[in-house]
Length: 97
Picture (spheres, rainbow, N blue to C red):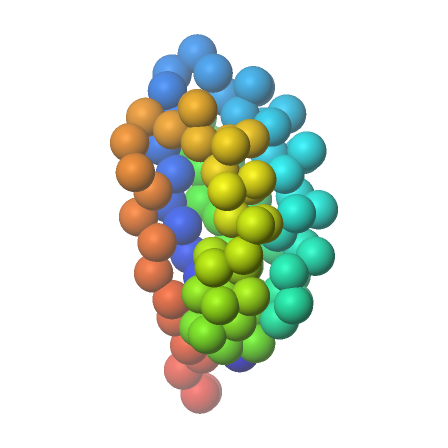
């Protein structure tokens, strides 16, 4: 399992519009093969900053089963207009305790 972490800065004043667009876009992302869970969080101190957390079976599941399909442009068309800049996206794996 890998965790995709996307730091998304939204144009100030459009946070509620972004959240509404995310609600519409959520099923597009969740329906991708290899997607285990999706969670969006919003900054308390920085309310225009959102963090998207997606658990994938693998990095390839994210890249091939989502980004290289029709789902990605559909997703991006809904939420992308509210971006203040390109999101910063990285993948992480668990560290055993």
